[in-house]
Image (cartoon, rainbow, N blue to C red):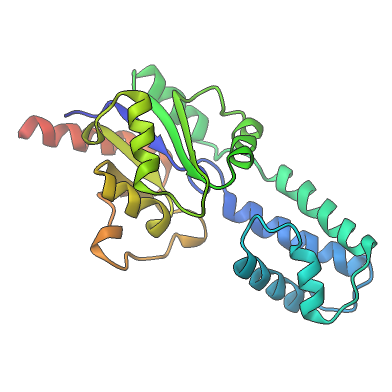
Length: 233
């Protein structure tokens, strides 16, 4: 079957989530220091990262626990400064990669169905799409409420689009959380080397992508290769 649809992950695929998160956290730490906590930026940032890793991205008291672990008294002023800096920076860096919108429009113009398959809190992920200005471009958006994609995420998207896995390409940046479940579903997996996991290599055969690209516009080359193989068969 030739390619009829291209599905995309969201974070580090359509926009630079790794840079956004790093800048938001480092600016939050700077704001806490400016508000009066007697610590250095390196140790505070390192502790904040460990707190996020321990409690998860959606925990609401990262800054409180960070201060607790550092032995610093919590004050409303310090927490408010951190929250304000974090959100101001997060929204400032929430912008699509330069080639994202042109690539999506080219795919639509060429009659491919396009969609998003992502994971996380659904309202939060939808907010990203809205702020990125991408929410109207997709035929389907499927969001798995969890910390990674699962095969059911792709199956739901395929049902909604009335498509077969073999005629669908998925582009994602994370091997374990995105490429592995894509492979398990049977869609054509494409790893885009971006973000904090760009240097990561597959740990098992299940995480090896069918193709690799460095920028989104290279997806047209992938489609040609998939279709060429179908013609040869």
